[in-house]
Length: 128
Image (cartoon, rainbow, N blue to C red):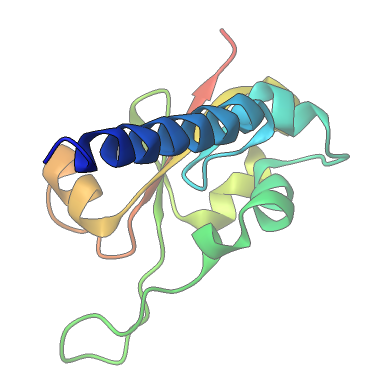
Protein backbone atom coordinates (compact mmCIF):
# COMPACT_ATOMS: atom_id res chain seq x y z
CA UNK A 1 0.00 0.00 0.00
CA UNK A 2 2.91 2.36 0.66
CA UNK A 3 4.11 1.93 -2.92
CA UNK A 4 0.78 3.21 -4.24
CA UNK A 5 0.80 6.29 -2.01
CA UNK A 6 3.68 8.06 -3.84
CA UNK A 7 2.09 7.12 -7.17
CA UNK A 8 -1.25 8.53 -6.05
CA UNK A 9 0.47 11.69 -4.78
CA UNK A 10 2.22 12.07 -8.14
CA UNK A 11 -1.11 11.73 -9.97
CA UNK A 12 -2.71 14.40 -7.78
CA UNK A 13 0.26 16.72 -8.28
CA UNK A 14 0.07 16.26 -12.04
CA UNK A 15 -3.69 16.87 -12.09
CA UNK A 16 -3.31 19.96 -9.90
CA UNK A 17 -0.65 21.39 -12.21
CA UNK A 18 -2.85 20.79 -15.25
CA UNK A 19 -5.86 22.36 -13.55
CA UNK A 20 -3.96 25.47 -12.49
CA UNK A 21 -2.41 25.83 -15.95
CA UNK A 22 -5.81 25.67 -17.62
CA UNK A 23 -7.34 28.13 -15.17
CA UNK A 24 -4.42 30.51 -15.55
CA UNK A 25 -5.16 30.86 -19.25
CA UNK A 26 -8.90 31.20 -18.70
CA UNK A 27 -8.72 34.98 -18.36
CA UNK A 28 -9.46 35.21 -22.06
CA UNK A 29 -12.00 32.39 -22.03
CA UNK A 30 -15.55 33.49 -22.60
CA UNK A 31 -18.77 32.13 -21.27
CA UNK A 32 -21.23 30.89 -23.85
CA UNK A 33 -24.08 32.31 -21.74
CA UNK A 34 -22.69 35.81 -21.11
CA UNK A 35 -21.56 38.76 -23.24
CA UNK A 36 -19.86 41.43 -21.18
CA UNK A 37 -19.15 45.08 -21.84
CA UNK A 38 -15.49 44.35 -22.63
CA UNK A 39 -16.39 41.81 -25.29
CA UNK A 40 -19.00 44.12 -26.79
CA UNK A 41 -16.40 46.88 -27.06
CA UNK A 42 -14.19 44.62 -29.21
CA UNK A 43 -16.84 44.19 -31.91
CA UNK A 44 -17.97 46.89 -34.32
CA UNK A 45 -21.73 46.76 -34.03
CA UNK A 46 -24.67 49.13 -33.71
CA UNK A 47 -27.40 47.18 -32.01
CA UNK A 48 -27.76 44.20 -29.71
CA UNK A 49 -29.14 41.93 -32.41
CA UNK A 50 -26.02 42.44 -34.49
CA UNK A 51 -23.80 41.93 -31.44
CA UNK A 52 -25.49 38.66 -30.50
CA UNK A 53 -25.44 37.51 -34.12
CA UNK A 54 -21.66 38.07 -34.27
CA UNK A 55 -20.70 36.88 -30.78
CA UNK A 56 -23.26 34.19 -29.81
CA UNK A 57 -25.33 33.24 -32.88
CA UNK A 58 -26.69 30.16 -31.09
CA UNK A 59 -28.76 32.48 -28.88
CA UNK A 60 -30.82 33.50 -31.92
CA UNK A 61 -31.65 29.99 -33.11
CA UNK A 62 -35.08 28.50 -32.82
CA UNK A 63 -35.46 25.86 -30.17
CA UNK A 64 -37.75 23.74 -32.36
CA UNK A 65 -41.50 23.31 -32.61
CA UNK A 66 -43.56 24.20 -29.57
CA UNK A 67 -45.81 21.39 -28.45
CA UNK A 68 -48.06 19.88 -31.08
CA UNK A 69 -48.03 23.01 -33.23
CA UNK A 70 -45.45 23.71 -35.90
CA UNK A 71 -44.68 27.08 -34.30
CA UNK A 72 -40.96 27.65 -33.71
CA UNK A 73 -39.80 29.08 -30.38
CA UNK A 74 -37.26 31.85 -29.93
CA UNK A 75 -35.84 33.57 -26.86
CA UNK A 76 -37.77 36.31 -25.08
CA UNK A 77 -35.88 39.55 -24.35
CA UNK A 78 -35.77 41.29 -20.97
CA UNK A 79 -34.13 44.68 -20.42
CA UNK A 80 -33.25 45.72 -16.87
CA UNK A 81 -35.59 43.06 -15.48
CA UNK A 82 -38.61 44.01 -17.59
CA UNK A 83 -40.13 42.12 -20.50
CA UNK A 84 -39.06 43.91 -23.68
CA UNK A 85 -40.34 41.57 -26.38
CA UNK A 86 -38.95 39.17 -28.95
CA UNK A 87 -35.63 38.98 -30.71
CA UNK A 88 -36.52 41.69 -33.24
CA UNK A 89 -36.61 44.18 -30.39
CA UNK A 90 -32.87 43.63 -29.97
CA UNK A 91 -32.48 45.98 -32.97
CA UNK A 92 -33.85 48.81 -30.79
CA UNK A 93 -31.09 48.57 -28.18
CA UNK A 94 -27.70 50.13 -28.88
CA UNK A 95 -24.85 47.79 -27.99
CA UNK A 96 -22.94 50.73 -26.50
CA UNK A 97 -25.70 51.10 -23.87
CA UNK A 98 -25.30 47.52 -22.62
CA UNK A 99 -23.34 46.51 -19.53
CA UNK A 100 -23.99 42.76 -19.86
CA UNK A 101 -26.18 40.27 -21.73
CA UNK A 102 -27.03 36.81 -20.47
CA UNK A 103 -28.76 33.85 -22.07
CA UNK A 104 -31.04 31.67 -19.94
CA UNK A 105 -32.04 28.22 -21.12
CA UNK A 106 -35.75 27.40 -21.37
CA UNK A 107 -35.87 25.64 -17.97
CA UNK A 108 -33.95 28.45 -16.25
CA UNK A 109 -36.09 31.16 -17.88
CA UNK A 110 -39.29 29.30 -16.98
CA UNK A 111 -38.15 28.93 -13.38
CA UNK A 112 -37.35 32.63 -13.16
CA UNK A 113 -40.20 34.19 -15.18
CA UNK A 114 -42.88 31.49 -15.56
CA UNK A 115 -44.29 29.80 -18.63
CA UNK A 116 -43.87 31.08 -22.17
CA UNK A 117 -40.09 30.76 -22.35
CA UNK A 118 -39.72 27.60 -24.41
CA UNK A 119 -36.96 29.32 -26.42
CA UNK A 120 -35.15 30.64 -23.36
CA UNK A 121 -34.52 34.29 -22.55
CA UNK A 122 -31.93 36.97 -23.25
CA UNK A 123 -31.41 39.26 -20.28
CA UNK A 124 -29.88 42.66 -20.91
CA UNK A 125 -28.61 45.00 -18.22
CA UNK A 126 -27.97 48.50 -19.46
CA UNK A 127 -25.47 51.05 -18.19
CA UNK A 128 -27.59 53.31 -16.05
